Image (cartoon, rainbow, N blue to C red; front, side):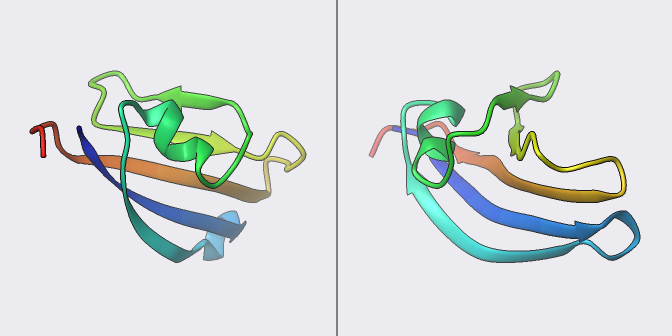
Length: 75
C-alpha cells in the first residue's frame, strides 16, 4: 500500500504556514486525505501530490491539506 506524507497549509498567500504533519498508508490520495478532511481532492498532472482545499476560503486566504506520495511499494 502506498505511503503518503500529509500536511495542513493555512494562511494569507504571502505567509502560508505548514503544520500537522503525518504519514498515512492508504490506497489512494482520496483515501489518504479522507483521514483529515472531506474537502474535494485534486491531483497534480504527474500524480505525485494532491490537495484538498477548503471551498470556503478565498483567493487571499488559503486552507488546504496536501498529500505527497512517498512510495508505491507494498508493505
